[in-house]
Each structure stands twice: as C-alpha cells, then as structure tokens.
Image 1 (tube, rainbow, N blue to C red):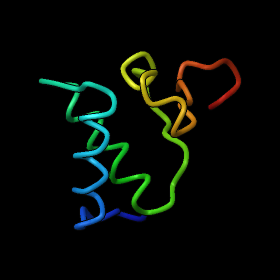
Image 2: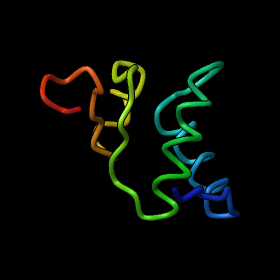
Image 3: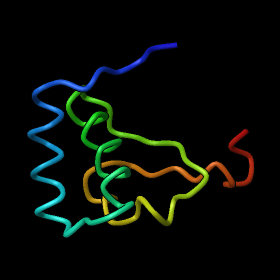
Length: 71
C-alpha cells in the first residue's frame, strides 16, 4: 500500500481547485483528495460517493465502486 503525502504542491493545487471549482465546506475535503492525487501524478479515484467527485471529472477519472463487475 502506498500512502501519498501532502506537499507544498498539494496545497498549491488545493488552493487552485477551491477557487476554480467554487468549493466550500465539506467539498474542500474532496478537493484536498483530488489535490493530493494530482500532485503525485495519479489520475483516477475509486470511491463509493462518485457524485461528490463529479465536479472534478474533467481533472481525474472518477470510478464508482458500485460499478457492476468492478470488484
């Protein structure tokens, strides 16, 4: 298992995402996850709440864990 660290680049990406996507409140937690992924070169997130990440679908591939045949 690989744990991705939050870096200076992550913070810069988070600030950009919050401004660009108009995130507030709990949405900032999702934006932070996307920022961590993007700052480490990851381009896909597997999640059980794909709807919450749909605002970022132009930046990352959002894969819903409920997709038939996925697991």
